[in-house]
Length: 146
Image (cartoon, rainbow, N blue to C red; front, side):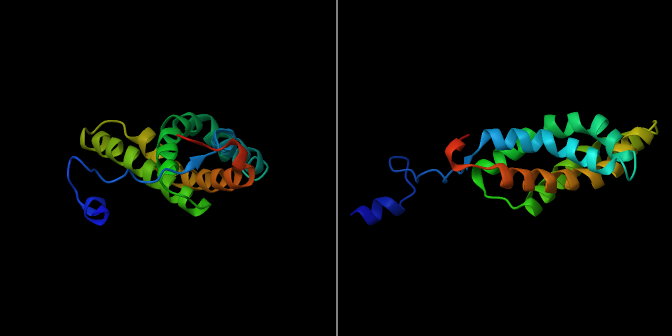
């Protein structure tokens, strides 16, 4: 009888929710804040662009990236490459419609095109560094369900 109720999709016996993964909030916060700063410090001797990218794109990366990464991490385990792909996908989903609306309105779309072009480079770069930092700083003792 338990096999029937375990496999049924009734309102009385709903299927259990998907398993949630535990997230280390200390490592997550340090990884998200530290990756734009780390890329800016490492890239500053090579070019000045990473330093300016951290100033202009960092707040957007944090404001949009933290909720997206927390939601995704609570349901899936990600590698640094997965962090980069998710960061790029989120960036493109946010700035492509903004750019297209500015372009269709025949307005000044230079700023949005700069954010779209430079962000397409720096979002995955920051995502890879965030994933590496998170994996390096992650401790089982601090993990909790989010």
